[in-house]
Length: 180
Image (cartoon, rainbow, N blue to C red; front, side, top):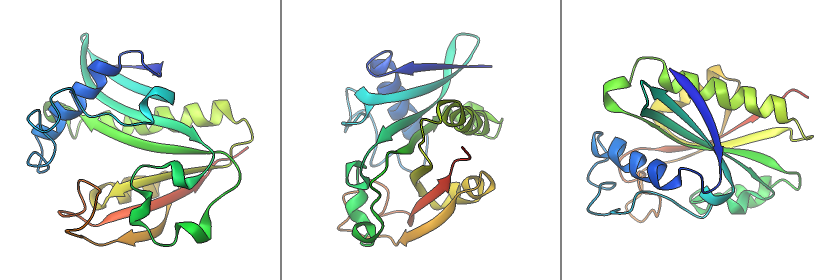
């Protein structure tokens, strides 16, 4: 397995379709599937993000995203967390998102490989960026805590939520410091 790093639009169509493919083979398939997202899953951050791709024998088996942002308000779905106004940073930070792993490769270290690659990348880019923020589903929290993240806020399940998963799971806002 190898990790490839791309930026912006490069491979974005393939990445967007891969995300939906992964969700179609998960408990979230009712929300994210090719019927609801025929062109793939993408948002306003993809064009200015680093995309980490894991391949096995030329087949894409994992992807994740890392974006340099200036304000927490730029994070999609951040409005789900009511304490953001109190903790907004004036310094640039990394936003860590969009982990997707092919069902047949889950529990084989692909997610860990993507996590480690993103943290290594952040450390190599230092740029006086001291923080990384993320929104995660509950099952991801223990893995992120092992990487040095801590929970800032938990948002319970909500039928009114705009976040696609919060009707099924609690969602967590996490943060970590990057060693400079």
